[in-house]
Every structure is written in C-alpha cells, then in structure tokens.
Amino acid sequence: MKITSVEVFVFKYDHHYRVGGHTDAPGRLPGTDYYFEPQWKQAYSRLTESCMVKITTNEGISGWGEAQAPVVPEMAATLIAKLFGPALLNRDPEDAESIYELFYGFNKARGHTASFTIDAMAAIDIALWDIKGKIAKKPVAKLLNPDAKSELKLYVSGLRRATHEERVELASEIISEGFGGVKIFSGKPPKELLRELPDLRNAVGGSAMFAFDAIGAYNFDDALAVGLELDKLNATWFEAPLDPEDVGSHAKLAEKLNTPIAIGETLRTVREFEPWVEKEALEVAQPDIVRCGITGGGLIVESLKHKVSVIAPHIGVCTAIGMAATWHFAAGLQGEHWQEHQFDLFNTGNKVIEEPLGVRNGLAQISTEPGLGITVNESFVRAHSTQAWFISDHK
View 1 (cartoon, rainbow, N blue to C red):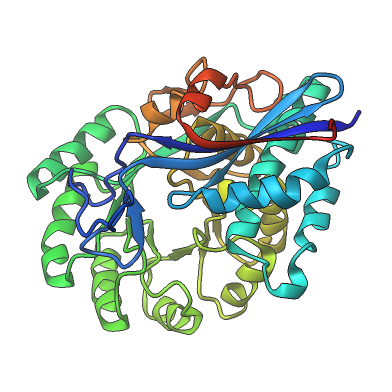
View 2 (cartoon, helix red, strand yellow):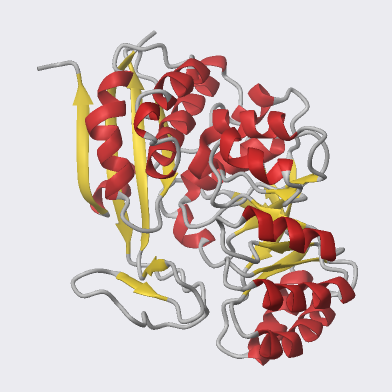
C-alpha cells in the first residue's frame, strides 16, 4: 500500500475561544483577526483556526490529522503543501515512525527542529495513525496499548466568565456534572488573584483536581506568591508560571513549592523536554499531541519514564480531529492520567465530524471504531477553509 494524495486545509471558523473570558478582541492588529489579551504577551485569534490534513492511499483508505495552529495556520499548511506533502507520496502509510524520523531531519541543519515544523509533522503523523488503525481494524488506542482505557477522567480547562462570582458558580456546576476538577487561567496581579483562589477551591471541593495556569505571565516573585497560596490549597499543579524559555527559574521555583510544576504546551520533542528534566524544572509533563504527533508523543513519554511523576497530555485550541487523537493517545498510556477538556470549545470542535465525540458523566468515551474512530464532515471543513492544496503524483 502507498500514499497517493495529500490534501491540506487552512481552517478558520467564526468561534471566539475567549481565553480571558471576555467577548471583545482588544488590541486587534489591523487587517487581521489577531489580538492581545490584556493579561498575556502572546497573540490570540477571535476565530478558531487550525491546519488539517487528509492522506489517501492507493486502496482508498484515508486518514485525517490536525496541527494545532491557533494563529497563522498557513505556516504549517504551507510546509505540508510545499515540502512534507510531496515527500509523502508513494510512501508506506503504516510506517509513521520512520516518516517522523525522516521528516525531522529535513531541516535540522537549518535549526528548524521545533515550532511550525513539528506542528506540520504532527498533523501528518496523526493522519498516518488514523490510516494505520483502519488497516488493522483497531482503534488507535488499542494499537498503542492492547489494554487501553475505554474512558478518561476529564478536568475542565478555563472558567471563561466575566466576574469572579460567575466563575465560582461555573466551577461548582462543572463538578456537579461529573467532571473531576478545573484548571484556571489568569495573569492577574497576585494580590487580586490570591483573593479569588480560595473561593474557587471551595467551589470544586477539597478532593477535586484543582490546577492553575499562568500561561507564562509572572516574574519569579509573583509566581512564588501564587505558588505558596496554591500550596495552602493543596493544588494539583501550577502550570507554566514563568517565561516559557526560562528553565533555570522554573527549577528554582520548583524547589520552593510543594505544588508540582506542570510544563509541556510549548515543548514538542524529546530534545526540548531534556533540559527541563535535567534541571528538575517540571514534575508534571504535558505533551500536546496536536503539536508533537502520536509518534512524537510516544517518544517523549518513553524518554520521561521514571523521571517525572505525572503525564497529563495538554490540549488547546483544536477541533475534534485533534481531540480524538489526544484521547486515543491518553487512553493508551499506562496508569491513571488527568485529561484536559476544552469545555467551551467542545461543541465547536465537534462540528468538523459527523458523529460528536462522547463525554458522559465527566468522562471521555474512547471510540472503539478503527483508527481515530471519527468521520470528518468534509463539506464543512472545505466550506470553512480559506486555503486548500491537493498534492498527488498525477500530472
């Protein structure tokens, strides 16, 4: 069997993720959909954006993948259209691991061993695993681990409401619906935040999963102040407290806190995780499958064996294609793991597939169908794509 065509889509759907909880897009860049949240430095989009890929074989079996691309999905898509896609033609679709290693070397000499390069590879890799499962007539989770879990414990990521009172109310509702806990986003000054955290902890209950994500907003002193309060509240973890490139300061912070430091959203390869592990700067590792791929995620987890206490796959802005891939990967992991759930994005993400992913009583339901267990609504994807490429060896 061989790959005969690759299709790439720049997907943009009119749904605002609203990481800060507001409905506007402050500081919007002229002529774009990109803006800046007041609490953070990074750009966001008022749309749900992604890069999708469809790979088809000479026997008519197709697989779908997704690269998490919350801004400028054209970058990953162009890499696939101009470089990786043509290189896929006539290759064995079941050889995902060798293709990953081959493509990783394409631009290594130029220093392109992270970021958009690995994002593009992740989309391809997910699609290849989808095909691999369909050929084997097994779900991806079972390919990864014959004893894969059928359900995953979910925690809700973000309390996207305008006021503190509304966030407290939502936190309580989430627990009542069966979810295992919440993760809060904020870059507010510590004095303001410290007044809110105890109320939120009380709302979910002392035994629930309770994490805080600063998305790299704090300096060391502010992060320490927040971390010490999280210690008092018996928090599950403190995610991305400092500048995402500052490994040393994260290591120093980890020494001073009981609350585990969680890192991984910005890291895509074994090499990128290595300095964090060596300096003991993280205790919870969060590989993001829509950024590193299933193959890359497996390599990362294997490299972290006996070196970190918890693996908790990250999931950010993506559609049900990326969500399904993440769920299958997480279900194949050994032991119990918390899985991030983008509650406010879930219904939008499900629009790209014919039958929605299932959540019951706060638990993700892992499909038993072959591959990723999804059927992509191709007409919807095409209708909401601003650019698309079709790559084949037919002239």
